[in-house]
Length: 124
Image (cartoon, rainbow, N blue to C red; front, side, top):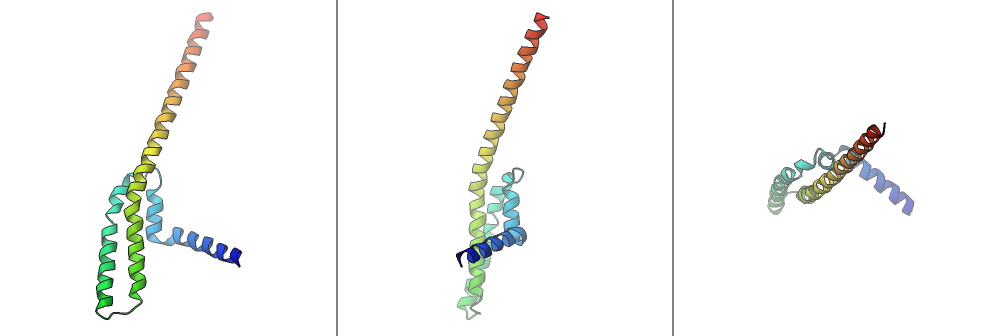
């Protein structure tokens, strides 16, 4: 039974990451090229919160109860977009540190091979 639940949850996660627009956008932001768009993407949380507020007002005025599911969905999406900003900043800083370290290693390796080549040329 536990194996079945695990398999269903994995397949559901794969489907949502592949086809739901917010998850696709968040996956694109998490790439190296998309990290710079994390802070502007935080602004997308505001329309989701506005939509949740509108649905809540409709529910209070006697609207259908299924709108509560939309309110939960809107709030969940707003939280996802609100968190992507700080997360993308951390990921961007980490990527830039790794890139700088790789450039330093490459420069040191080039200097070492250049010194070796000049030493070989002076011997010959």
